[in-house]
Image 1 (cartoon, rainbow, N blue to C red):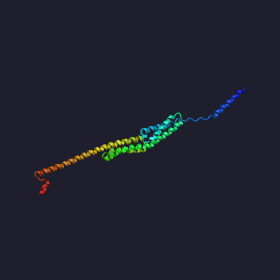
Image 2 (cartoon, rainbow, N blue to C red):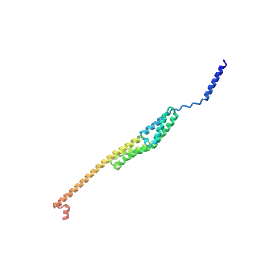
Image 3 (cartoon, rainbow, N blue to C red):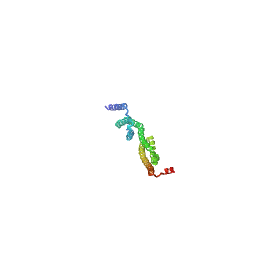
Image 4 (tube, one colour):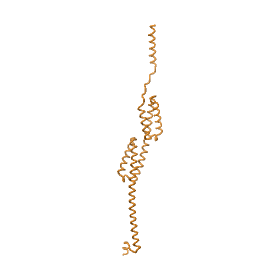
Length: 218
């Protein structure tokens, strides 16, 4: 009986070792893609702030779907979550690549319209200093758009539009004032000429010679 116990222990030990050797190795745990989730959310927030989804609707919808899938898998299947979030990041970048130029083109077009109104009224001469300030902001906005600086580019394009509109109003007021003054001068000249003609007619009607007639009679 005493000899059977050690053998039983040996058998159990061998069986345990064999079981451990045959068990499949555990896969290392995948860390939660925290950075990817934060970046995807940040890109979506920025795209929404400038309504870029309206310019690239298909790319935007696909990116949002990938973000939702990534959030759903987050903490449960982190490998799948990372794959979806990486795809979302690429998708939102595609939204910026496609929608960004269209967004800035729309802002620039509005500013160009305001600038043209000012140019048509010769505001660069009539309101020289204010026009120069508006042009400075406009030129800066163009550079910011090229650099994909959405925050400053958006603000400066909108500001330049407002400034050009104000310059156009000032130029129009100056033009109207000058036109009115010219009209008054013309009216005065016309009135003076009419008064002279009336006076000459009166002299003739009453038999008095006018200067020209008197000279011609002599």
